[in-house]
Amino acid sequence: MSRLPYLTIALMLLTTASLGATPLVGPVVVELFTSEGCSSCPPADALLSKLQQSGTVEGAEVLILGEHVDYWNHLGWADRFSSAGFSRRQGEYAHRFKLDSGYTPQMVIDGHAEMVGNDENGVRRQLALAAHASKPARVQLAWNSDSELHVEVDGASEGDGQVLLAITEDGLSTEVRNGENGGRTLRHSGVVRELREIGSLRQGQFSATVKAVHHPDWKSENLRAVVFVQKPGHGDITGAASVAYRR
Image (cartoon, rainbow, N blue to C red; front, side, top):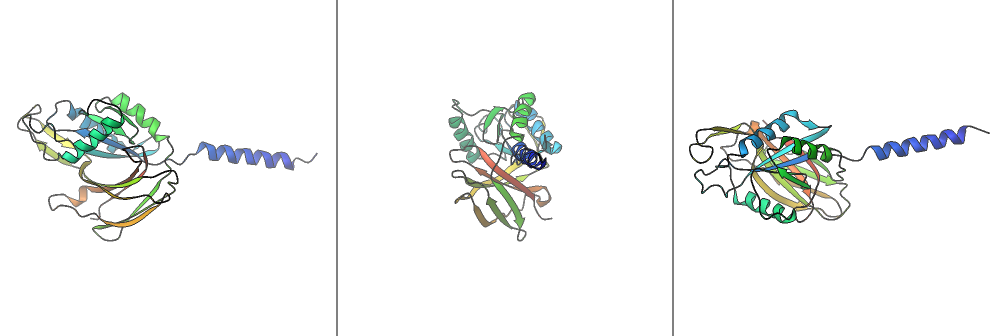
């Protein structure tokens, strides 16, 4: 009997196994809800910076978003990076995860799992899981000019999705004078300066050129644009990418 059929079948099995063993994975998005007025937050901020410095978790790029909430501002120190919008976003996550309320520090990984942000072991366990999760949305970014960013999304064939743009800044620090962290100098990475929805998927695709201007007080050499696709209702993040600002 000819060996050719057996070789053909073997090659087919190997190909199928190979395809099954390599799901489409992408960057992991880590959101930290934090506040300079919360004494439990500095370790979480430090962990966020550590994750950024490591760059990857089990081969997946880590994209960090530091979202400073405003509900601590009346307790002795007003966080200059805080926004009511971030508090509302956290509140939506609390509803999704069936929590009584948001809290600080809270991390949300890929919109899929939440945990205490200073629990490094728990965070890393969830990151390892997220690193191997399939993310069907392929996001590509390219600068058309210093302030115009072209965004392309494809491959997200299942269901709807919102496309969001975050502008983040690294290398920030604050000398806190009052409140629970009074007398401390706090350092931050990936501080979200702006977060907005730029569109929605249509038949799994999105294409647009958007304005990504920055405030004169922001240092362009420390800025990144992070674009991610999220299912409605603050659901799972199904794809993401980031790019540094032009210098």
